[in-house]
Length: 414
Image 1 (spheres, one colour):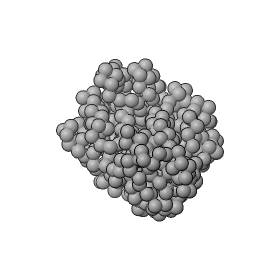
Image 2: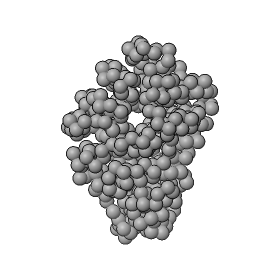
Image 3: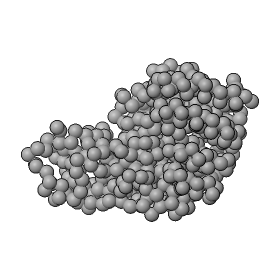
Image 4: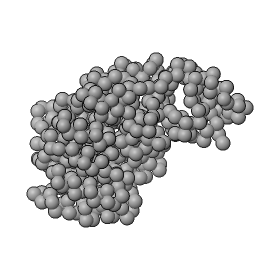
């Protein structure tokens, strides 16, 4: 057994009570001003005040001692919503949006998601892997140690499977834990224009069975929005996915209050994501069903939209997570520090609430909380060292990364 002692750190970790932190519990952080973390074979074996941890440790059995020199230690970020598997950027569309063209209008013109579909379909699997790997490595340098990545730029069976193979390979060939999500219902492809129900038939009758057979995804997601997939279409897809053994998540109420949040509650989804237009009644249904709200402030920033009502959600008792939504159209960022800064400044979350949202609650949203998301014995030793006195530095020092070191399972990877 390889044992490591990380001493002299200011440790900040969300309190994991076995469920996502909601309401006033979202801001509960365990703090050790002069703390230590003991790691064995990549897992946390002890954490607490330095003198106590050292007193419980036989120093002769320690293979490595790392002096953190008083730096702040927090869990590695968990990014629970990304579309990081793509090839080409869409800068021209960004210019259109900045000139006032609505995103849904760009999508109707064949841009947006459909633009990325063309390039991903035409890309070789190796080219897609290399382009995606570069973004994953950037996310790692910015502190993300666990990440969810969706398919959804294929919209046909062969390309969706190609994307999921690339996502699986990213998990095997980079240091990060990667959670693959099938998002075949990301948009209606051009060959099914005005035949959305027929495309849903393809997703349910061919794509999901093939994914079940290959065991290549852990979740199924669907973009439930006006002009994309209706509530009834989304329900049909997600129920088929659940029957096939996949967890279910949903892009809900991003532009219109279509009722996606209520559908997530009715299905007991792991999360409902976006929620910029979700009604109070439907958010309350999520509270009662224990569905985590994954908020994506960088998307609102990029689209110049009002931010999701994080303060209201937390005060209402909803568990809130944060994610980058990294994608080539509406949120091209791999930076969880940037997202946390936006959440604190523009969504009125406290720094501790935002820390929980970007670590523990994010882990619950993708079924990873047993192994990551907080600094607790038995979990992976995924942690960051920050150049600051507390996690507040993430929002306070805007536009830069205060991360000085990234550790994955006790091994320094940046």
